[in-house]
Image 1 (tube, helix red, strand yellow):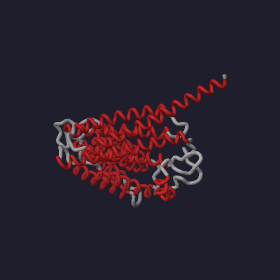
Image 2 (cartoon, rainbow, N blue to C red):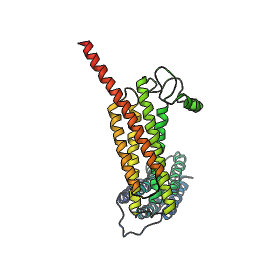
Image 3 (spheres, rainbow, N blue to C red):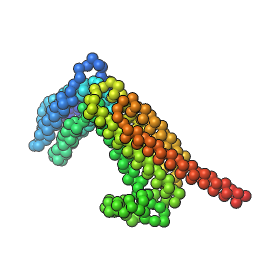
Image 4 (tube, one colour):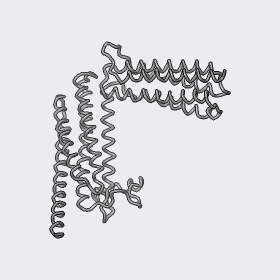
Length: 365
């Protein structure tokens, strides 16, 4: 009898998991415009119900091994609740652009994944070699469901908010790259890529986080020529960061002034700007990686060319918004200037490298 019950539990679990997988695949598809829009707070409320069912699962394992019937009934209720949660989540994506849809999907996927771990662990352990150790593990699994459901409250509910957060994340990533660049040091000294005055102001912080501690980091042996390129790259990234910040400030000012709809041409423009900024962030990462010796000068030139084009495209897109953006346009000019400065440094270094190789060939002959 016990073996038959275990098989039924495993079969039921497999069926439920497959059903949820199929439903989750529906979330990858854009909901039809005829579908009623579901407010995000309704999804959050349903998420609370999912967590409540997770606590009920946990309560089953507070004592002795539960009856198979109780496990199966609990499993059915849990997956039915999870299914309802997924359907509401799909409805919340009506009118959502790619960024908001991605945010919703990521949050929903966390709830699903944590739910799968909870149910698979409890059911398979019950049907297999059940031990009292499971009582220690279940609270952790329930806690993971709680964290995923709680995160729903922080998920953006509008296109504009989702895009704004994504732009902020690009800025955060650029700031990390900039910090790493400033930790680069020449081979014969202890100064960072920043000037003496700036280094004096940041010494304590750098010592506190251990970034300049003894033992050496990658990139601490840059030649004077390589340091010049690193310094010019720092200027590019600094101005790219200002570019992102001014773009966010411009968009925020426009939203406060005109309160545009969370759809249509305005959101389309924001999506394009976000894509440009994310592409710029990828090129900034490329620049940062290429600064470690041996420096990859041609790769850096390609990255700079792409960033320059992204700046031009970003300027044109903002112009279509017909808003006050003088500070943003100034940040475009500053970024383009720093790009030209770095290109000059790269050209000079590449020319010197070619001349050195030619001279070496002449000497060898």
